[in-house]
Image 1: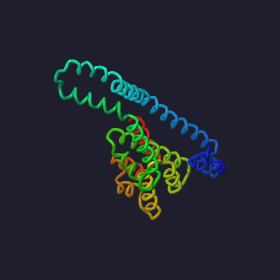
Image 2: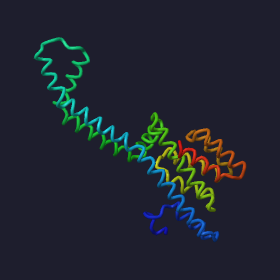
Image 3: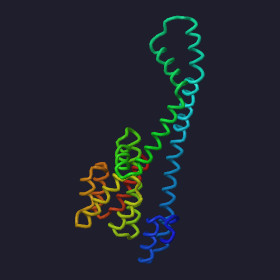
Image 4: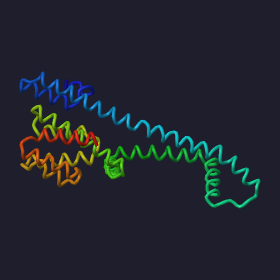
Length: 241
């Protein structure tokens, strides 16, 4: 399975290895199926929830472009023929429409250039860090991104621990699955401190990335000896939110 990393992610191969070693391969494969179904269900739920707002955004932009390019110029001709003084908001709208008609190719090229330059910048280490930091701080969107990432982290970590994968190995796998470098660094720093004898909650709390509620729940799970169960509870809570 490890020879086909494009098909089987590290979390799958690690759990299969743990199942082979402990003689519980059948149980591990069953849990992997459940894990995959939960991840797929979450992805479908997010896509279905975002489909309507994205459609409305596209339609809204299309309507604004149509108004600026075709409707307002014809209406403005009527106002000009009337030779009456127009309110300031109407004048601003007419001027914007004129600018849009004259310079829309330039504006389109500038937007495309900014998108291309932004994509290249995000591919650099500094650019990726700034983009991921900015993404987590965005109103509304940042909260959603954070909750989705934490749900994935805690569910994957809980699944690995529940199937006999050592904590440090499990955290390394989870770190590689996260797409946000800010969260990756927080997990890596926690992993290094845990390897030196620290508890899991102390370095996670020090990083300031994970919400206090997550830290408290993980701390309770660690102290009660039910860490993986509490990780699953965190994942379920953040999935529903």
